[in-house]
Amino acid sequence: MAQTVTNNHFIRLVNNRFRFSLFLLYKLPSAWLAGVRVTRLDADSCTTVVPYRWLSQNPFNSTYFACLAMAAEMSSGVLGLAHTQGEGLRVSMLVTGMEGIFLKKAKSRTWFTCDAGAAIRQAVLQTVETGEAAALTISVTGQSEDGTEIARFQITWSFKKV
Image (cartoon, rainbow, N blue to C red; front, side, top):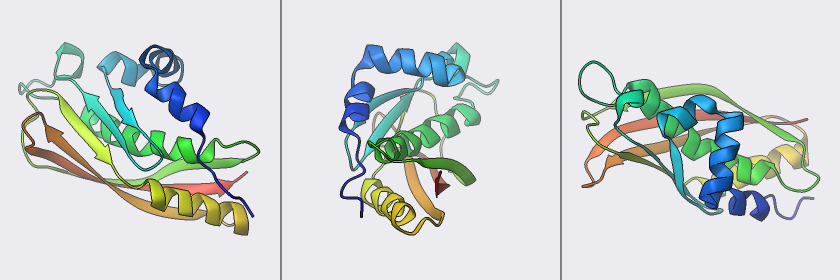
């Protein structure tokens, strides 16, 4: 039975701005170019931010919806990676569904927070113990600097033992 699946080394990498910027440039160059960054990660939650700037804008003077979706997916995905990259673990993860609701125009930076670390940890443990794939739908909320809700996403992740 697996005791823990949280990879503290990965969490330290993500919380080091320079090292994670290089990781993004190598693994997710489009997110790096759009300016999506992780502002906080621990075992239970992750917050990302996407700026409103030339590379992330749309013709309607707001942040392009795909950049918002990218930041939302990253907040849950990085949290998932923190729980699947443990020593000796061989668990893959894949987005199998996404639903987004856009409530306001994103005219400045938008922060996306995912607080599903405990649920992700449980899904990964279930996958490791049973060998069966586990699917988990995670809620991610995007807010502007003043706390106005910009968007809500439901992202379904599948965890599978490799």
